[in-house]
Image 1: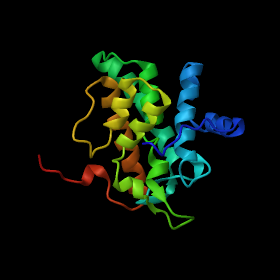
Image 2 (image 1 turned 180 degrees about the vertical axis):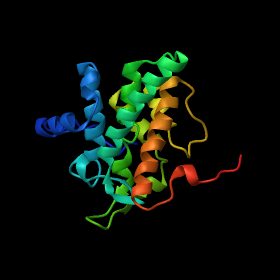
Image 3 (image 1 turned 90 degrees about the vertical axis):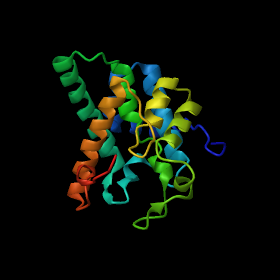
Image 4 (image 1 turned 180 degrees about the horizontal axis):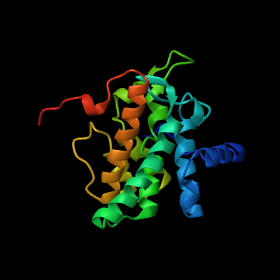
Length: 196
């Protein structure tokens, strides 16, 4: 989007993100820096000052996005290990960690409001979740395969990636999301019935 500017952020803000994001240290330095820049871009173009302020969802506003992202990374790494051991999956660890860390990078831009009065932002009605994240990643300079997986990871996406990393992200994301929704007293995805 034209009005979203790539923002590197201040050194102390970048360090705060570096400490907050689980799994970032497993990536090569230049890729880890791009992950931080993508998150800084989303946060600094949003109404939030820090990632710790961003809720996971309006259905579970007390659950923080950063906790969800870190859980998705941890779950994704466990699933990857199982997929390798059980089914001999070929998985690119750098690609996997990047998509796990970045899958919800657009969420700070999907919310507006102040304090307890958080609601959907105007932008959330114009650009679907995932697609907005892909636009941010494209602006920051991520490769097309990372942009594609993040852009299509949402359950509302009309199509999804077919590579192992997309498959693992899907289940790690939904498992974490359902845990949060259950704790918040909301209906988890696994209870929703969708007809083919």
